[in-house]
Image 1 (tube, rainbow, N blue to C red):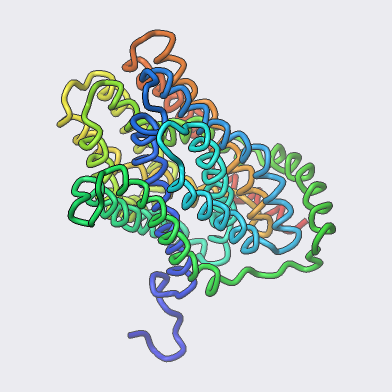
Image 2: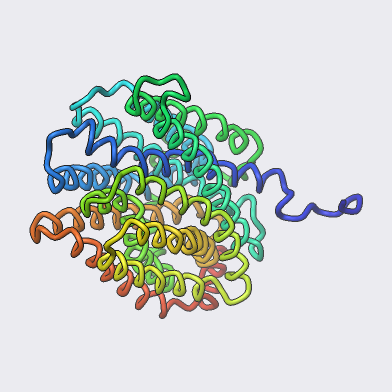
Length: 433
C-alpha cells in the first residue's frame, strides 16, 4: 500500500491501465484478422480458385491501399485533433468504424473476395486511424521517465489480450463441433464478430478514464478543421527544423516497414512454401504469448541501456529472421522463428513509440504522432506489395522475405545517427515558442 497522499506507482494508475487496455482491445483485430484468419480465409474461402501468387498480390494490394489512405489522412487528422482538443473523439470514431467493419466480415460469402477486401480495408483504416490518437494520448498518462515502461505495458497487454482471443478463435476453428458449429468456416466467420465485441468492450476504459488536457484557445467544428489544415503546413516546417525528429521518422519508416510486413504477410508466406495453415496460425499464437513478457522486458531494457540501443538490438534480430525465413524448410523452424519474433516485435514497437515521445513537443503530440503513423503506414504500402511483386516476378517466394532485410539495414543505419539528447533539447525549446 502507498502512504496516504502519496502518488500511486505508475503501473497502478487508473489512467495508465485504462490507456494500456486499449491495446488489449484492438490487438484482437491485429492478431485474429490481420495476421491470422483473414490471410488464411482469404486464400482458401473468399479467393478460392486463384493461384497462390495472385491471392498474395491481392492481399498485398488490400493492405497497401488501407495504409495509403491513412498516410494521406494521418497528419491532417492529428493536427485537427490537437487544435480542437479532440483526440478521444477521433479515437472513438475510428475505433467504431473498425469494430463495425470487422463484424460485417461475418456476412461475406464464399468467393466474394472483393467484398472481403473492401470491408478489410475500412476495418484496417479504423484500426490504424484510432492508433494515431491512442498513441498521442500517452503524453497525457505517462511521466517522461516512465514512458518506456508505459509504452511497453500497452504492447504487452496487447500481446496477452490479442493472444487470448486469438487462442479461443483458433480452438473454435480447430474443433468446431465442440462449440456446436457445423464446420471450421462457420467458426472462423463467427470469430470476426467476437473480435468486434472484444474490441468494443475493452475500449470502454480509455473512453471513460483517460482525460485529455484541454489546450488554450481550442477550436470547435469547422474552426478546428481549418486550424488543423494550417497546422499541418506548420508542422511540416517544424519537422524539418527538428533535425533528429526528421531523421528518426525516415529511419522508422524503413525499419517498421519490415516489422509490419512480416506481421501481415507471414502466414501467406508460409502457405506459399506449402506449410499447413493450422500450423502457421498456431505459430502466430506462440508469438503472442512470448510477446507478452518480452515487451515488458524490452521496456526495462530501454530504461537500462536507452531506447535507441534497444531498437537496434531488435532490428539486428529481425535481420537474422529474414535470412532464417529464406532458408527454412520445416514447420518446426516456423515455430522457432515465431518465438524469436515474439521476443523482439513488441519491444521494437514500444521503444520506437517512447523514443519518439522524447523527441517531439509535448503540446503538439497528436499532430506529430500523425506524421509518425503516416510514415509507419506509408512503409506498409511498400512492404507487402514488394513481397507480392518479388514472389510473382521471380516465381520464388523465398526471395520475397529476403528482400525485406534491405529495409531493416537502411533503417538501422539512419537510426544510428539520431541524437536523443540533442533532439529532446530542440523539442523543449520549440515548446517555449
